[in-house]
Amino acid sequence: MNYLMTDSIATNWKIPIQSILNNNNDEKQTLIAKLEKDTKENKTIYPSFDKTFSCFHFFNINELKVIILGQDPYHTPNKAIGLSFSVPSTETAIPPSLKNIFKEINSDIDSNYTFPNGDLTKWAKQGVLLLNCALSVVQSEPNTHKSEWEFFSDAIIKYISDNCQDCVFLLWGAYAKNRKRLINCDSHYILEAPHPSPFSAYKGFFGCKHFSKTNTFLKEKNKGEIDWLL
Figure 1: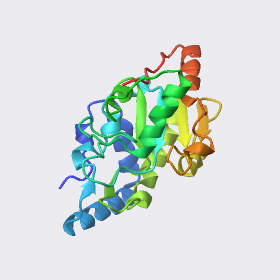
Figure 2: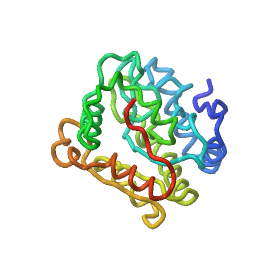
Figure 3: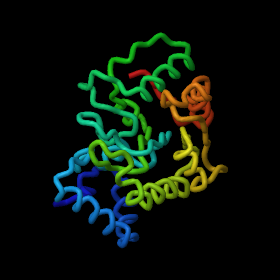
């Protein structure tokens, strides 16, 4: 079975992704061995392998504007689609953290918009990289593949930092903030806040105004603002 379906990536992200995997062969083989072991034990892995790299499918590297870091995919059925925080448009229950993201957007831009669903594909199509630090997870077992994917997500963040310019990194929560060490603060705009989870949203995520701040920066850099309303 092909556990790392990089051939399905039609954008030019395919080149650095394959390079990272090839240049870190020991780590890649450890990751594949973990995915293979869990599969042989009949564990369900989310998202499906054809969606592992979905966040890289919607735009080329030169079109990148914003990076929103998540921790790992949803570990319950019918939710993970390879985009951090996002769920399919057919999913009727919007996860709590995403509800809080929508609440902050409305507060930030002074809107009463009713989000129709939790599918963030529209953001991805505008150059928002919805990247989970782990790109897979076992059903009902959060952070199952966290350590195996770390080499890859760290390398992608470092690649963006070194090869792109004037991107906005939204780092929510301690795990995402830890990736700040990989980012050149002189080349990019970094915004930090508590995680939008119900456990921490009231500790500073609400009121952070990251969405308007992002658009102000992008406008200043002539990169085009993000339409945050789905």
